[in-house]
Image (cartoon, rainbow, N blue to C red; front, top):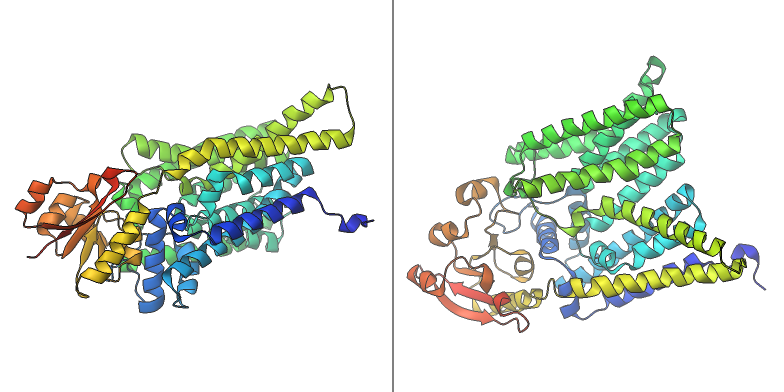
Length: 490
């Protein structure tokens, strides 16, 4: 009979199931791996490869770029130092992301157990580990998994720490976690602003003479890394923001205005809560799990309405974590209310019913999300084959160009210019403003390729420019996603 201290808990089966799933994903055939990863992840891979092997922050080896989130790129650079096969490197990155996600699951379990109870924590871990949307999100090669780790670790530390009795070490750790979260995704400045404004005006942290030393330590831990990153941008690119934000119409002024809005909202809410004397736990739930994700979503919603930016799933790790926590709590609470009035109050039967609820929920999520996810990136296979064709059929000194250049650039052995400007230089973007037609007419390139549906000119117009269609890589499921390769002999 197992000793109680060695008893296998349900959470251990969840972790085991997750590792089995991760092993299957890592060993998927290449065509499935290509579907798993979005084009943006390959931008990271190619830039990290060039930093590791050539010491240059560049995608195309022609133009310098800062179109990436810094902390994730730094970690990828360490992987690319080993100069492994390109496909093997992708598998290692997926495995690395999976390990990061596993650590995130541990923090999420501890966090939710701290907030509610063990059953809710198990359910939350299960929803986060096996929701197919989150699987794709966390294993897709972007910074999403790392962002989830930093946010869950930050939340756990915040909830287990008594803000009113924080010592020097607590301030240092909390400031450093906020600093790392900024480097993981710069839009986490929204979360940072929310926290600082709210805790100050709600009285959770008092600004008084006796506390100035601790606040100094907090500032000391928070400031250096973001300042180094911002200084690097200014010195090398003469801009505060990464080029990827500028391409989507986001300006430093608009970011500053939104930060002021956040400070006003959170300061006002903090003052209101101070008067009502809510518990510290309630205040933390309010700011970390409700206000911060709402303001984060509002930022992207405003940019979308204003015609700036876009929605990509890896932007929304913060809302996803908070939504999963509250969904778990709500479902478990509803289920307990129902079973409370059932004929059987046997604890063992109730536990079995809770397991059934968990498995049913995951099954429904698979039914809902898998069909939506499956067709999203099917043309990466065509892009991969287009890259192989380029490698085998073009001179080594050829310059290639494409608007959707991530996967193409990673597998192509030639310099490949990303003409949308997303991972290019500010000078390049200022010249062409993302206008593909202007680049086709004025740009310096030997081959241009992209999805058929995204090529801005008709075949007749392309031929008028002197371009020659030399190859079309078929995507049998969607004709408009065929990859056309055009040669520029001039």
